Length: 336
Figure 1 (tube, rainbow, N blue to C red):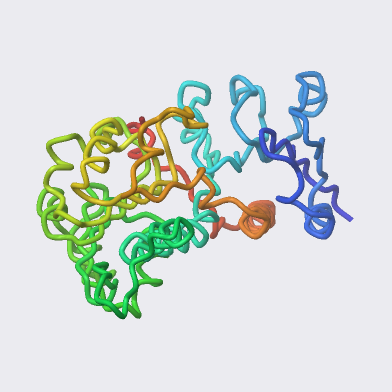
Figure 2 (cartoon, rainbow, N blue to C red):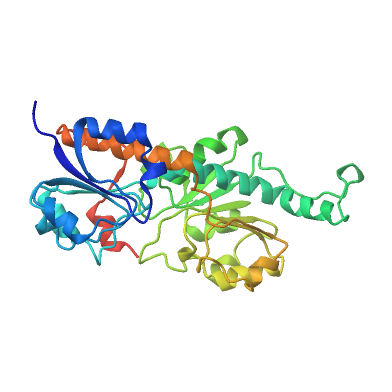
């Protein structure tokens, strides 16, 4: 029987469970010699003892120095939700050697898309505000004609970004018959049209959408992409769903405009986390706030663990991975 190849399982800052519960870990051990597999970060001496034999590293962030230290390395599999920091990992060396650098980001897409849909509906129908008013004895009764919210059905929707979250959300929106415009400079217009969405300029998207979903990953080019001038293009009474990264928004301008009642916002990500207790967005009646929990939960982590194991099995068998996102040079050069 051939000797199993060594895989360093070092997911810290995450923990082994719930990513790799006992049954999943047992499956991984069937085809790989698993090294470490503990919640604490692997100490340098533990890595040093096996580094010349390691073919794949599963990690919460690159902390192992030069990839030249790992002569057999074929895959770096990140379970934090993004690609390793280019300041820490030498991507050109990885590309030159054919080392696949992989992110578990697609594993978060179903849960985040579901939360985005729920928050959009809640904002449009004033579900959270209505609950708070009812508890305070100030409820507006629908049969009296006191309700002035809006339905999602047939409303024009805008996506900023068309990655894995957006594609999952597009599927969830299908029963609502929403026409979807997409701004994504990383996709061609032809590709977007094949996906059943309409490519659009950012200003046009903001001006014409009743609900705007911010779904793009951070890059050098999109920091504070939605500044005060652009936020002012949103329709009065529209909804901005901020579900990817606060990096894309001028959060002070967003806060000011939501407090003024210019539009509503549903927010899961913030420029500083935890958010300071005295931040004014906490007092905005037009905001639905969530503590960066859209992608959390055991179901998501189980999915990520399965994706890692499936792709590891393929790589060790000499086959291409199919489930995780593989880094492209074009993306890494522009990452923020």
